[in-house]
Figure: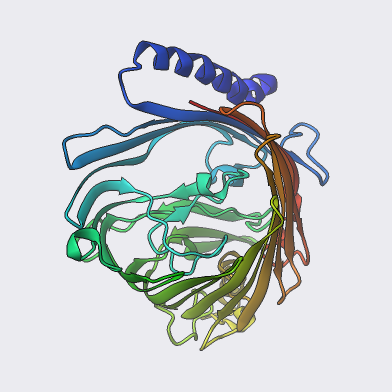
Length: 448
């Protein structure tokens, strides 16, 4: 039975490769493209003997971009995943082995004389920084799904987007307005032992779909000679859930705790800019986010915060490129999770535990959190090889992630990647807590 479960994603992947090639031949008149990829993650730290793999997955994406008229178009991406994870928390606390089919994107659009309108489920990434984007208001990520390409984990919402560029599209100015009645809901990755014995964790609580619960975002941008900048505003929801107590009870000396996952309203004001000079590219991005815990007195919830990223990159010769960033999160008003109280000693203990877990998951363990990233990449189009070393370091806390990887393009359509996710640092810090998830990974991807 165990072998059958482990082979499920592999069988799924090979069936997808066979069927998609046949489908493309039989229905070549359709504007159909896509990709099939399979990933395996092998833990580097004390794997469970019966479960030697961290994650095994196979995915099929089918994409169609039909033209609906002279100025109108559509885009549809269907995603089919077969997943088997070592721990249940790796699959959003659902069954560790499962099949899933979702619409990744599905929208229609029309563009004419500087005005473009799109409506449907869309992935709308905003911001210019690498990895961390303070102004990326409209998307979420499935952190429970491991993949070497972070964009694979991105989730979109159902939105209406209006893009207007004056002078029939020739102006340096443009304005984007996004209205989202169904926002993107992310999935947390819970580190091992974060949810102790006696705690039951419910699925995320989805807010009602009403006009008052919708999101609105606006971005005004200007593009100059060698530089660009934008200002943005967002009134919506946090897209990664936070933990909240539902109820608790005593059974003898044991405390049984029911916890839920909730999304909270936020208002953000942000901006970004980039400038090119000689071989250098400089980027900056910042957002001030007001949360329901604006006073900072409730350590159970993420406080109001200011996130900023400043970075620079440049090529080194013809094949190498280096990029470095400084990241800073500041809480203007802050209360330590360890000081959270309750109505009685048991409630105080529970509240301090939830506050500590939320602080770990949502990065508010300190009044400020400085950090940095470094990425050195190599690309050789002639030989088909490319690779990089990525390092993320939280200066407050000392936790880190090191991710080296190398890829080889066998053909224009087939590419393989191997690498390592190495988490380290104190186990009570976000990246250090994920040390048991350190793994060697491999992926093969076929595009068609």
